[in-house]
Image (cartoon, rainbow, N blue to C red; front, side, top):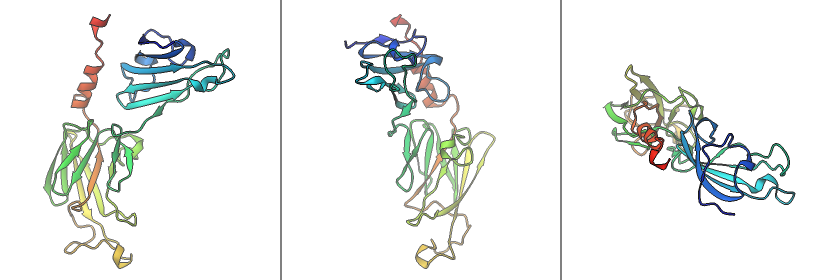
Amino acid sequence: MAQVHRDYRNLASYDGISQYPLGMSFGIQLGGNGWGGGSGVDTYTGMLTLRGWHDSSGGGYVSWQLASTSQGLKYRQGNGTIQGNANVGFSTTHTIYSTQNTTKASDGTLKAASPVVKLFADGSFETNDESEGCSVTRMKAGEYLIEGCMGMNSDAAWGGIDGGFDIPKDRNGQALIWLDYEVNADGSVLVKTFHREYSTAPIFARNSREGLADGEAADIPADQFVSVRVEMPQNSIWNQRAAMAQVPDSSAD
């Protein structure tokens, strides 16, 4: 029953299990009917489908799909209904988290990624695949200019347009810095960091730094970094690669 490959582009709906051959098959899905794409719809998405028997011994759960999308790998399972029912279909789409779509925060925890720039004390920086093309300049103590972006990313996963930052914390969960920012007319982001102190805390937890007062402009602590989630322009390196990958190969027709 195994299939080598299938062209799923002409299916009226990708949600009905009965649309697929029994056994295992691999193919591509197309456009607005597809599932697993991110903001907007991936023009083409690779999809592995395993369709098992639908009867009282297994139900819909024996079937599942895995999609390779621009946001990483996603999967969905059969919804548990039995063959003969009109609603034999697939469950909600689930995302498989990996280094492609997560980033490690300064405290070691994982957060949803997309375009993220990591800032270090001396102005050095790291980008991920989606933020490639951004650059960072340390303007003066506590000021870092991110260029090559179009302001802050508004995704709710990091708290919306004003929440696209992850700042370092101490072992008691207290933020080590204050942070402010400005978005310039050209889309560049000026990140400002300040020393943060806790005068009423026990001595060991006050975060005192010699020569610095609470609220004074200061660099990011030397052994830490700040993560900034930015919005990238349509002509970013990532977006250009994604657009090229979605151009159909006319020689295959």
